[in-house]
Image (tube, rainbow, N blue to C red; front, side):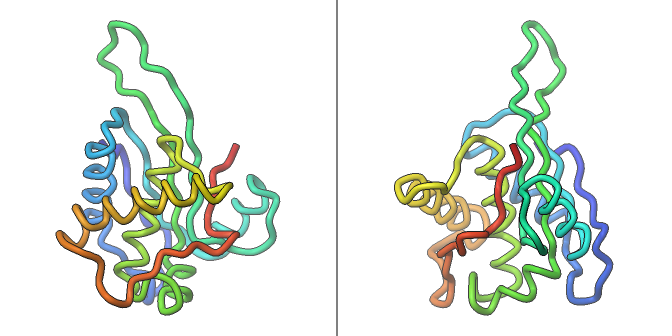
Length: 167
């Protein structure tokens, strides 16, 4: 379940259908059999650059950051576990989509799924982890975004600095 979706990025090229991306995140969590809640926030280039510097020690904006909370469910509680926060910059996505996923729509979908996978424990620090994560991304996008195989122009090779998980 996605607890909250906000868009703080009001630039014209960065308009996103937050309800659509909330549904993709929730469907991805269900498919991965992850229970709990997360927040999905769309912010501008400057805000994500500040978060990237603060939490990842990197200069400049990135496209997606994930902040897993790793909370454990409380025994005999109806209170859902808060899985973490995903922050996406549509402006950064718009600038890289032609060389990456192919379209703005596919780029945002990839970043949502990428963030969800980080929240539930996947990473891409080494080649084996990267392969597993990319397989899960493609499977989730094929099932919940395209409802079929990836379009011809879709690429998911991640730059070394693509997003990340804040520790």
